Length: 272
Length: 272
Picture (cartoon, each protein chain N blue to C red):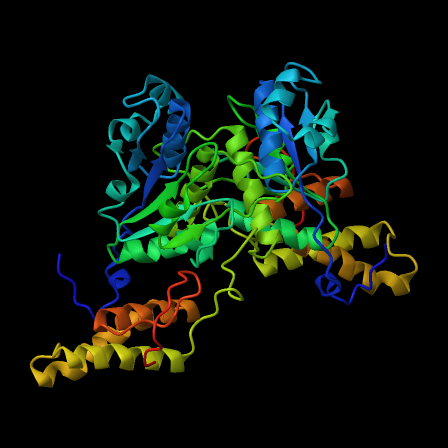
């Protein structure tokens, strides 16, 4: 696909090419499976493994992957990291240890931002993870463009591969999705009350409290009123919630409440 | 500790009070343990469990916690969610399903930002996680201030409790630490080359290429030179790397290289 080099590809609303995950000499089939499952949770599916100790395919991997069969079925096996990254334009090497290599170091969030930016340009990115026991050697890290390390507590750093894959996959989805979640508060079904409705709630409450002589001494009324209004304002009340509260106040005042649809109880119309 | 209400607590450089994690009726001791371990990785240690199905203490939990004994030893057990959150000022309820409740919904990153902000103010925050099979009921969610949901792929949403705890704990640490990582590129040991050193590298290379008549036809020299300089500029070369490249160019030119400290080989001084 040719692209006009002067136009920002994001302007064409192109979804970023997702990154792949590369496991270097994974020892346990179970870890390959849990990594596959972690990827699938966040929409990634290109898993590559280099020299798996116990070979491939692996029933333990498939079992641990739970329902992520689509990832297991598509696993590519390579005999070297060079081969596994051959088609990639950018590689992140994840490591917990500082290296004597002059390579930029990012956290998973920064790496995800870079990954999405490159992915929007059509560049295929890879996240390289090392062996269970000792990670990656320096030559393998040297193949990468950047190092990624997780902000673990240095006094207790025991993340396993699948957990590191989970965090990196999660961050990629956060950045690729621009913060979209499976669901948000349904504002359409729960619209906020208007300031006018709030004002009438305030006055209803304050009138009821005046009736029972709540504001004593009289000089304190303005500051107590401000206090009460602040409480109600902070509650970010919806339309429906204001109605509910007004019914509460009316009931406490001793007024008959308006007939309620859900209760099926008749009542005389009260003042609003 | 009293605080002057008009001064931003963050200005006093107070570390945020860390949040606690509450597991509601966890079924498997192993999941309690892996949750404890996930918390410890990111510096959290206040774990509360409500009505654990298999009771407490739990050897399976301790074993799965790996070295996170400090978390296991400090676990508090409650017989209701209300009791578990009694001392908290703000609670996030994690759930994968949308609810018929008018409650704000955040992702783990937003929840972490809120959690740090509240923690800096001294407010204790809790992250509530539900049962393995069916999460939290609506009354339990109603106890919370906000809902947290992870941005999973809706077609493959199979995060378990420990994974959700891991992601939330990770996000908290990212926000609480302001992006600090266990290590970064050591710029002091690897200072960038100055533009002047780069200029001399450019001229050295271009001189060597002139000598071998590389620029043909002559009219293309300016644009090829720009191309080469762009390549070298993009490499973000350090001081030492420029020296290395100049040694490479000198060697290819056939000049004797300067004596190298690490090789112990004598050579005549070359031109710089």
